[in-house]
Image 1 (cartoon, rainbow, N blue to C red):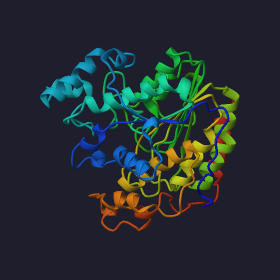
Image 2 (image 1 turned 45 degrees about the horizontal axis):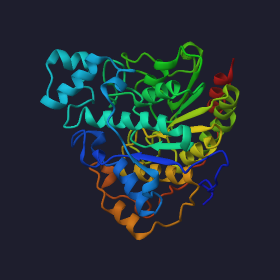
Image 3 (image 1 turned 30 degrees about the vertical axis):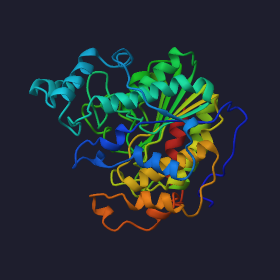
Length: 387
């Protein structure tokens, strides 16, 4: 099990980690043909319960964010438009264009307001709980593309931004935000780029949307520092486990330690995994588990959010493993029968889902994907560390 982090507890944690979820994700879908038609958060919850890792004392049902809470980052007109879209299941052509709803991958569906408002409520609750819990996990969070006045990249609200704002309101002095989604964390970077007490760092695939989208304000390039408090590591295709480990040790942890945060927020999108169809990266879930493990205990408060992930087996297994890491649980070589039944019950319309490999059903751990640390990775790190 060399690819999985060993379980351990940190003395700085005063309570058990807390998990935030909701049943809304089980019955809600963006539409049958949308990449987010798949079950993700519900699979993670079911696996954690099947493993005996999620007792009631650690679970919180996510509240719906209030209009007042959402307006901490989003415009009242946009919030109202999302409510109308859910109630009427349509918007005028002008409103669709203005708010980017019902177009560009941001569909109008049955829970188009309630689902993102629930994810946002969960991330706001995480900011409220973390002062006492030490570690809080909201896998439904991580919608990092959302803009104040319009939807973007499947993201209707920007729950990481709302989470960080709540942290600051509750007394956090320095927040370090790490985003390891395959797509650039543009919405969060742009929300905090001019503030001296929030540092954002995004590890994402070079050239992938939104870096090449005209409507994106954040380029996600090495030169893009958003006023000084952002760092970007646009990595090449076939980015492997060894390269992620190198970036963490040579770049992320030194920047984190120099910044000295009291709170860390990790956006742990799973779309950089080798089995995901939405990127050309080549990571195993063990690489992402090690990211979480290396951040655990480095600040008094630690919040982990979800993000991208478009293969139901890989994202559910990855996020369940993140919860194991946060609790210090060892991950078994083979899953118990109840967990295997959950995974065997999944289906996926994508071509990769027609003949899924056995390990998608029987274990949480992906095969390791080590490789050389390429010169361009070392060059990226050197540039990012440049004053």
